[in-house]
Length: 495
View (cartoon, helix red, strand yellow):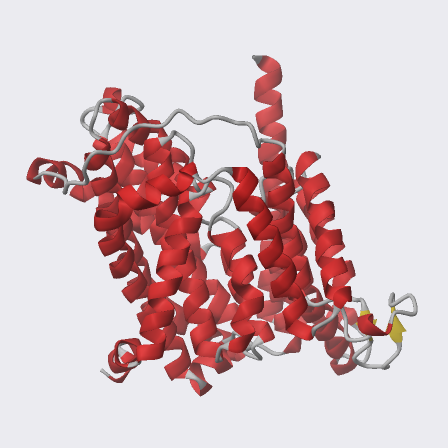
């Protein structure tokens, strides 16, 4: 009962309600704009959260996450272009349905499915995050080191690149985390005589550069691209027959999305594809899929939004991001002095359940906005890239500079923007760099502290059951993507 009251706290705070309203609206706009999305938007807004208290800042980021994931469905239906990668499966049936003159029905089902999936995932978050955190009470420094290693092995599958390229990018992120003063010896490392680097490279310039700036450079190569647009005359609720046809699909995909979201490194894109695939497998009319099936939209949208709450479970309970956007949220927690983990559930339950309640309210808000504002949001896609991206560049520079009033941060942001652009061009995902940067400090610190505890005998790691379990899981996690890619390559060679 007390936890329920803590979840309702945002309803009684005018400041948090305002933050929720703005975050949901901003997230929807970001989701609608192809090329943007909750990850880029969260990175873009991250510097400005420093003016907010920790709870307001994280509420802002999570509301952007929830609404942005849904917003991608609007462009997926109307212009056959997913606003976010998680909405890619929605294009398969959403756009064909819109071409039949039923864009309103398609968006109505996407809105309902997204809301149900999102609320379902928050319930999962409320029940399972504390349980996972309680297990983490058994952790010491060796266990945290093994957990961090397990988190790093997730790099092999977290991005769109090959497993090897993702691991290389993650290793580069770890290297970046070593810049600055050594926490045990106070000796400067890799600062090259630049005093501003003594405290290390900040999260925000790297995140803004790799996500926002690199995306801007990528989009600049598509500046003359023309989308085929479908007119949207009205938004209408799905019929009773639609509900009867899809309620099982929505519940099934909500469960799938929540489970996939909990797994570190998977996220909404994988969840939506599996949700769509399972909807087709269980459908009585699988031949309709790809031609405008309402079940296809329901399956994809319920799953990708359910993954939002699921991805927050390892993020808050263990400090291991469950998706690219939760990596940005984890960055926000760290820069506000909040360290995720079991102590957070014990010492700051009001903070955590405030986040849970905010996510619940954000899902209800985008449900309202989705029905009454989809037509307006769809028109945002008409904004020319020649106008949109220079504005984003200006906001990125101002936000990065405002954090420490340091021009070095701006140069770091620009450097990582260019680096991210070339990484994307040559098949490297930028997400593992951020994960490596976040977990790098944890890996180094817990390893050195553990070796002090073990008097330098690293074999003592294998005498700790929890640590040994995570090492075994790490080996499995490393081997699985490599085996899968070789098997896929072998099958292609046979064809």
